[in-house]
Length: 284
Image 1 (tube, helix red, strand yellow):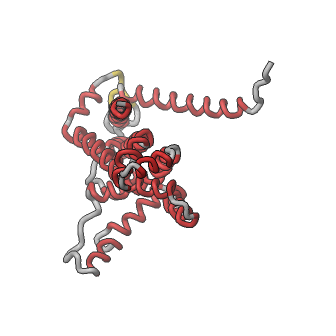
Image 2 (cartoon, helix red, strand yellow):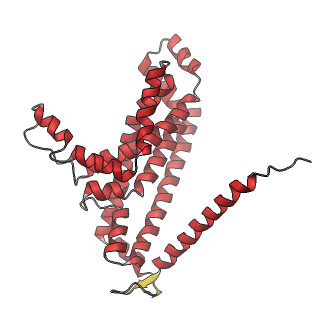
Image 3 (cartoon, one colour):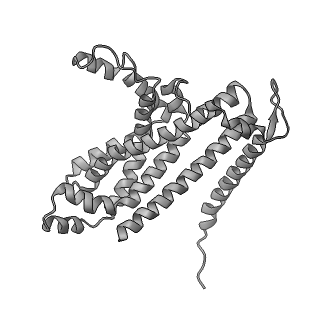
């Protein structure tokens, strides 16, 4: 009879308590979302669905649209920036180049999101590094407005998500047998055609996983849209903060959070179905 490892409970027990804590917190948010808001008080009233009816107002609809657009743009641009790095990380045989790429990719993970966001404020400001460089080179006559715009928020969010995307893409690429690429080359395919017809199709699982992770991560991002956007780029997370901690309308903030969670799940399910369709097309 096989004896079960004695260390197994030490792994299961913490995970169980963490899961229970998340479930309890989720139920707390859900019960707040169906309670009435009492102006000027932290107490809540009785059962009501009015909080969810209020989500159809234009200001909140715009916040949902902005969040989806930001998440999609961040995921797409993050993929375009991360794929070449991941490919070079996996395929290069020069040790120092591999180490340099790995350091560049991983280092941002050692910094908090707020620290990274403040760094981008220094870079993207009207008197920041980027505008100063463009002015010095004579490419622009006046500073470009990056701060408090969706473009600036996307740039900063791409930097936040890139380390994870690079690691996920590198993992997928490392499982591709280089012999497939060599076979395509021996049959007359050039580097670009080999990349488009062999490497990218075989790395689709990593592409889908990285896109899904980046989208979900960006959808709930708060610090970067709040600091870079400066309140002019509304997202679900920033609206929840304003409602909960500025207006003290915790019931409506909870309803907005639940709606955001439901929308995220629906979009992730759509991405999953899309990935299955792509896999099915690839098999044919």
